[in-house]
Picture 1 (spheres, rainbow, N blue to C red):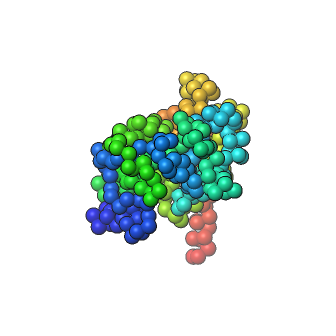
Picture 2: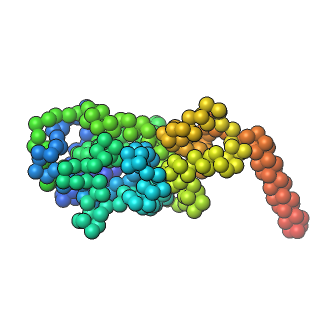
Picture 3: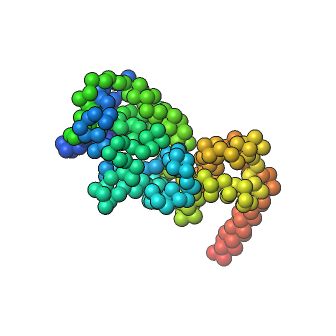
Length: 302
């Protein structure tokens, strides 16, 4: 990727052409420093918890619905809505804000966040933002991460005399854990994005993707109560793990989507041999049929 093109893309992400943007037009690295602390003593406490655009990651949903002691079905019905994420065409869950209460987050109170220890990853990163640039030359398909500050005018946390590096902030907020848990999901988003805007995900594939990435109870039933295990071969140890653990099932789901929707390969599940043989026979039969059709057309032209 040419240097000028990279610079333009960074500027666009950092919104350098918008003087009213709260994003600071400075690219931060992992060892870059900034000053910030949020606590009930600052005058702006919880003001940032309004009118937010929060896409819930799969691990966010697991942590939040378990914290609230409810099923994924009920959590999604009460607190989220499905929508298509930009040019990726991927269905995601967006956290509902309380429009009747000036766009307030449903979990914030004057005393702070009711689910603070299980809050979404984007809340953990604040006031840091993260972006990526695709390396299109030497390292095809790789993503280079970089960070930036989101500095809103009302925020007094930047006046607090506590200094962080980007990495120390991420570690303190457990963002590293969330990033590692959601890495497979992010790889799926990037994989779909690499196909381009013209590559649409069929409605059935969208439904499958949304179910697997937002609703562990439904996905577990899909694995154990449908013909899934007649189609895919899965190690017994993995089956024991995903039967009990939501996070293990989530990671397994990422692998399944990579295979089922994007045609990738996985060490954790593979099509049974009889299924593969059947598909091969279908392909051979289809090719023979096409060959005969072309031969008939060719003879007709002579």
